Length: 134
Image 1 (cartoon, rainbow, N blue to C red):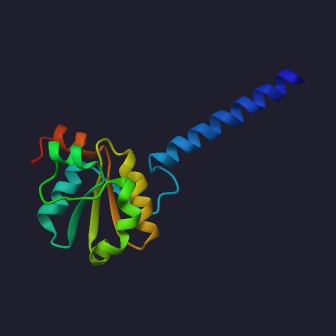
Image 2: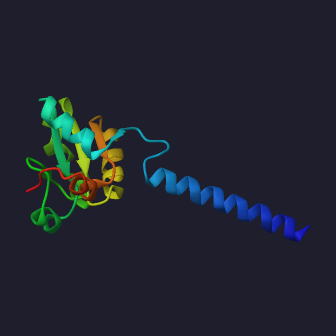
């Protein structure tokens, strides 16, 4: 009986871990959409009502970023929400280095009634696609 309880607890823990991982990647319970780097590039070229938000650190931004991106690090994003109010009418492509911080930023923006589009894979995916960077 003891072994059976341990097995049950193990599977509950594994399910919880999988749920947490899926949530952190924006795969479940996301209140925003995600797009690929290529889709982001097409959107930027074809629509005027789109802006780009880089939520990496200023040092990461200085080493390279998507042309025209506004930089607000994830750690400062919540306090910068009032300054971003003019972006509420736009779609906001949100990216970081690999796509983890941008999920958190996209959740925060969506909770404040913005329209974020999380860029899967972040700046790394942008560069791998051979897209223009500064």
